[in-house]
Image (cartoon, rainbow, N blue to C red):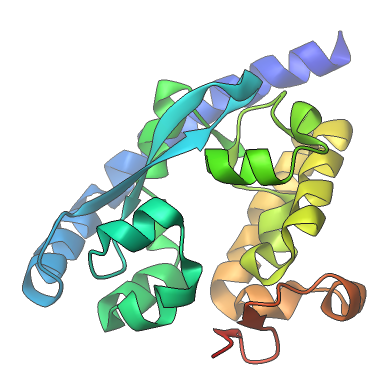
Length: 215
């Protein structure tokens, strides 16, 4: 019963916060779109299929940060990311503004403000362990995995943190994670990776110390 009440409060908060967020950010979106048109011609939004609550698929929305490469997007080739990302795209990523169109996904009910990471279908197939637990809740714009290293961590470690969030969920945890996300935006994801995760669970594709992809 306690968990159900928390989930009801969570959904009401999601709808209110996402609607308010879109209203507040709309003037910034106009500037972002103009700058994108000037510096990186192509689609404004990056759309990609993700797996949500109860394994339901949906299309996630982000501001595009990289040059268009349909083949790389189709095969999820992150090896090309450092070559494709644009200077303005780096700014959008560093400030997390590229993620904010997901407020539309939250308003629709595909996602939540806080939750497990929204994952591509291919990764679900590659790492099946723990998916039933993590996909019992809506994926989140932020969450435990997102504030403890995110892409700097291996996939199994990120899945572990996603499952931990589902098991420990309550409204106070959500509020703590939202405030911690502000710190991540200010100081960067690499500032919040634990020593244990750095040593044992690092993502081999990234240089954790510098926060850049390995070549």
